[in-house]
Image (cartoon, rainbow, N blue to C red; front, side, top):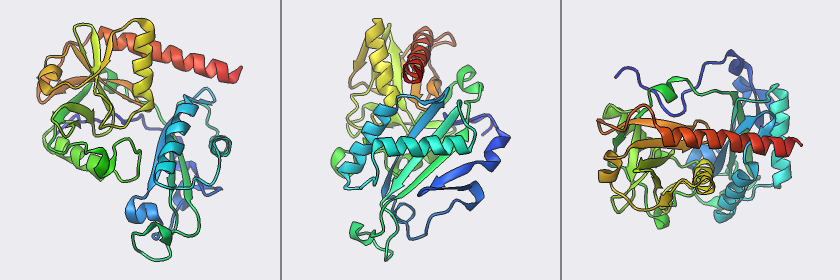
Amino acid sequence: MTDTHTTHDALEDPRNADIKIYVNGDLVHRDDAKVSVYDSGFMLGDGMWEGLRLYDGQWAFFEEHMDRFFNSCKSVSLDVGMDEAAILEALSATAAANGMTTDVHCRLMLTRGVKVKPFQHPSLSQSGPTLVIIMEHSKPVNSLQSAGIRLATVPQVRGLPMSQDAKYNSHSKLNCVIACLQAEQAGADEGLMLDPHGFVNTTNACNFFIVRRGEVWTSTGDYCMNGVTRQKVIDLCKADGIPVLEKNYSLYEAYGADEAFLTGTFGAQTPVAMIDGKPIGTSDRPIMTRIQTLYKRAIADYVAAKSG
């Protein structure tokens, strides 16, 4: 398949070849950034992560990201080993070491740490957590907005909370990787995933919205990562008088949508051009464009408040 892209396609930036990465308090060149093969993250996917974005020296909506991060770690009895202020200090040190101030994407990763034996039990991680921070100079490619994303509905579903709650932003991403592979093999860019009851839920990488007759719809949030950007879009719609609903809906409504778009920390709002080979709306996308304007203003207001 040609002309494929994903919601995380970024412009090439040669500066990323020499970035420094934070590994448990040390800042090392990317070629030297390593964790043990005994690390619980490598061995079992036992860890939590956050994606953050730096705008003009400020990490956008930092408090919301930390609320999710610390809540997720607490839920799986993973001791972060530092408080929110110390996390911010580590982020600031990493950005400073790389001369980064804006258009930066960060992946903050915490695992249960190195195990004394290569087995599952959490008690075998005895030396404390592993904290890694990767920051890259990163701007979305222009084609994400002009061409849009092509989705394919995939057989892989987001599971029930008692199997593996999708609200965890965990290192265990095999469920999403399988969905991504299924979409790619179906000739699409990303996978549109249903919930266990067959309702439209999320994609393998982002939260999913449609626009129908002037209303913005997204899933109930019961079976998807409750994204920070997702919630910002919901809140901005409510504040600006755009009708927004968190509800169950099927592919029938998605196929007939006037617009569809994805949300995520990296791409903010990314248009969807096609679902299962069916074109969605036109290239105008007035509601998504309005939301993008509101979102950019919200970021500017946040940066101004933090900088002042």
